[in-house]
Length: 442
Image (cartoon, rainbow, N blue to C red; front, side):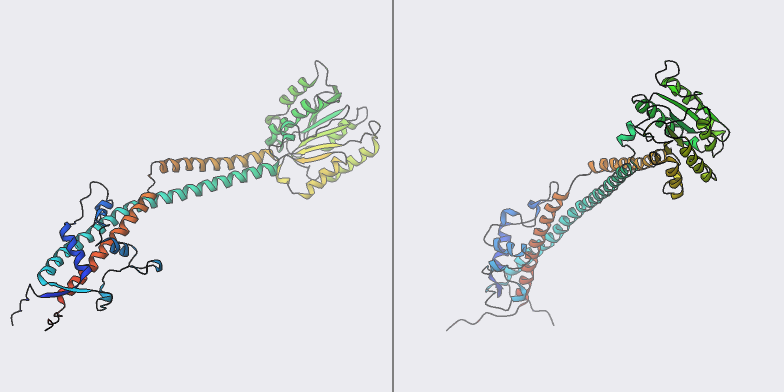
């Protein structure tokens, strides 16, 4: 049976607001513009110049709000929609010729097709920027992480320096051997062994500061320097020497120290050195007793603890006070072997021979400086990495604001597409609806 052709002039029922909008689109010949560069609001499927027209203003606002009416806009006239198409109170309908509605359907259908394509173009533009911005944000986070790690390593370095008193003014300018000297007869005894070989520079530094800043500037009149090893005790002078002596004074003592205390002289002497021979040499019969002994050593002499402590006790009980009110044979000792840190046996030995009026310290500056150097090298690596990442960031454009702008453009484009698609659906319904107009009143 052939399909019956419908009368083009037949009155067709359609919501009036939808009809007027579609007709206005046709009259104004509204169509998406081709972009000259990036997509802007001028390239919306309905350009912004038409958004203020009475036929579009409220409807565009409605769809821009995702078809949600807020409470303070509850009196707003909402556009006709398919879900309320049968509600006469919400959807006012009038009859128009079928031919006219068919023409509107074709035009709006083409508009929806173009709007869908334009939405895809706005989305592609946004995604392209978002992808670049995501890379940039990841780089920013990476820079922050590296910066945090670098600052944490710097803080650790500072804490390490403070804990180890590495750059303490007392020891940068002064010496760990002590800040005071006796009135005379100060003896400086230096261990010469293969174990002390690794601390040559640190030992010379402490002895030099003792001679220059304590003995030279203080009231001490005379002093002597000696090295002691497992085989011999070698003294700079056979007796205590006046520091003011023009030939055998401080300058000559420092010259002797540099010549007789070196890696070469230490490497040939096995550890441990002979502490007993050193003590006997300078406290024996016919010798001027030292008023204070300054000792630089690696660590305590193995298997000789008892012998050394016994001898020191005997000497302190037999020598007597060097002058009224002066302590007997006090020792200021600096040990350089870092392995004895927190070793209670080592501490007990040195505290005992140092005596009540002496002192004992462990100088770990050599190992500490190596540890600090590693820390600072790690910081330098992080700084280099940070500079490299920062240069990379400088070359990347900050698209955060443009992403926000493009997101807003896309949202409006989606709203306009939604409005057109809704109107197309209603026009299609009108063409398929077979409701005839009521007969005229007689």
